[in-house]
Amino acid sequence: MSHDVKAVAYVSVGILGFFGLVLFVVARQSPLWARCSFLGFGILVVAYGTLGYLLEHYRATLAYPARAYLDHYRTLLGGVAIGVLATLAISGQIKQLMKHRKRSNQSLQPTAGRRDNQI
Image 1 (tube, helix red, strand yellow):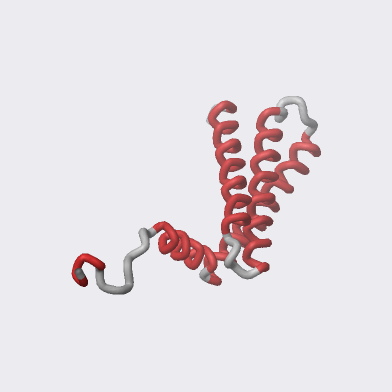
Image 2 (tube, one colour; image 1 turned 90 degrees about the vertical axis):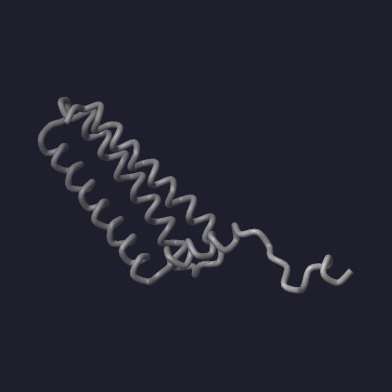
């Protein structure tokens, strides 16, 4: 895989992190722990993408211990982010958020009979 393709992949991961940050703002009806988890997920993924990009961009100039150090923390951040996402999925918070968004985008339906039928 070339360095440009890897850079695009890590930038895409960073964009996914911003999606997590947006979910923190959107999920106002969710419990506080779920909102904090969305925020934490977004921060972790942005950090993962940044570390991955820096590691790939400066790989040739870094000494081996520095590369190993960055790679270790990148892997650690990725594992924690997957754990946070799995916790949110198991608890049903992501599903609940998607149902709420679907429901709020539907047009309002009248609950009583139409006025045309009464006239």
